[in-house]
Image (cartoon, rainbow, N blue to C red; front, side, top):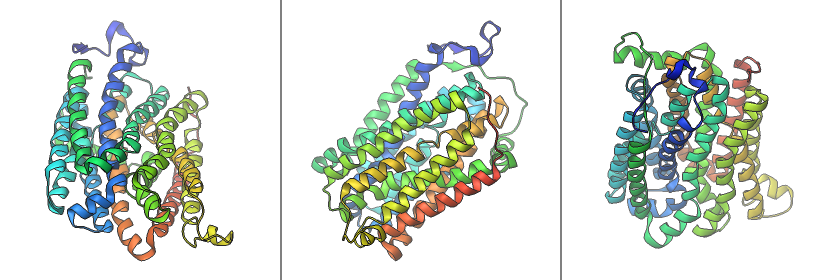
Length: 424
């Protein structure tokens, strides 16, 4: 399958290409997104060990891991340009090589500065792990069908979060957090080999000759254009809330507030993680069958925001536990609300589908990069802010902060996005 794959084979439209010609490459490329999710959610189950070994506080660790998202966000513009100029396969291989290097650095470094460098390298390498399979699928599918495949891609990639729940909790408990990065490096190498063998080169449409600078400017212009304004506002807060809970604060909340040990916390995060895996596929099917992306996105994010606000009230002397005359609510309450949050927030891949539908096919990579830019710039900024919020208001304050900004962003999205039902 390493031959050049022509989008114009037999004069057919890309959307008419048989599923077998792109399903296996898309799944293979999505495995790279799995390692991306694995490395960025590892701190959630090993935050205490990392903070102790690196000599930083929990708030300091939040700032260090936020550097991953900053580097990730900065990588969106060059990755988007590269995908449209050079194609998916070479870009994917280059990024996987950077990811492997970053994992090895993270496993070997000593001290906060070294960890900061490793996070920056990992963020850059992972910056295109979601865009690669999405761009590959978008080049061969109509915008109407792309919603299903974007959900499938996200669901496969989110399996990396499953690896960083109970399995990684066990590994960290007995072998330390550095072992997690060694496992991620090995997994990255395996995906590199699979991409090299399985993913074909796609012939690209002839486009006007433009400089790299001009194409980078187009990414920003697309992102700030009126047609994507509501999408990027919600993107800025959507992934930030999801990754702040699953990637950093979920584990400490369950261990420090609810009194679970590391493996129990990993088990408690499993339903939430499964929702992040199954949910995108479910919403992709709903989008394909019924449409109404705007309403699906709005409803899902409102549910997620409310789940965080109610979760905050179940801690020691929280507003809900206090109202019920209890000092603290049982952990089953938290598991249920985390599941509710994960199910609602899992609708977010449809933001990529909305971005894809707003541009011409030769700007696919740039449009997806623009949406992803706001996904991860929001994660970098808002996760960094959770540290000061935690110092001022504790972990319940972090949950209220994230739930509130998510609710505000959702209302802004609904106001700025015209209501229309896309055709199937």
